[in-house]
Length: 316
Image 1 (spheres, rainbow, N blue to C red):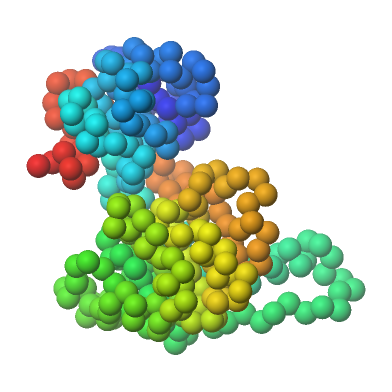
Image 2: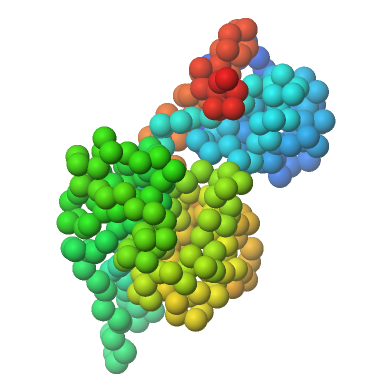
């Protein structure tokens, strides 16, 4: 078994717990030795490496790709299925952690926390320039795009902030509207009316660049946009232009079209932004639970059973 996420993310004790069934090797996808080990691997615990036909050609013995996360847009499920390779993920594990980060980003933007931290560190005493005022959350309209597991957790956490919640999704959730105090609206209405827009959709063909120039122009001039889903859901070039022109009030992003964000990327030089390094699931507790699910999926495969957390395309 090849663990491609590194020892920091995947606990050594869980990997070694599989050694009664397989030899375990840790390799970073950035290292040359990774593909040498991949050639002999029966199972792969995958981080963000792209698993496509070219990749699979280098893994002739592979029987399972266990994604270390809930999203699996980096894995060509069709190519894996044609080769008889299982694809699994870790659904329902990281929803709370991502929702927590989402609210951290919202608060950072609304109250200017990052700017104030920098202001103090760079020499508060003696400054004559005042920081711009932040904004209250009370009474603001929170627009949630995508009401899956994470979107629901964001809505639950919103209850304590006295905001007005609207949501847009391909499915209307009437069962949750009353209990969470939400109202269903079409996407354009959400963008036009919301003070805070937060995105929680998977990356599939229909959501790639879901938010582009047209959609950004619909937003209020002082509205902020939050993305903790997948980078390509937002047209990043269009977002940069909208921020430069002052079409929207700001952006807080944990994900980007290209990761890591390239050095010198224009987005990093813009004001009114908060940028984090894809840390949505990066808590000790959540990463441990994700690893436990991956280990369970791999063990099932190695014992000749169907893994319990197949991606939806392989559950048919």
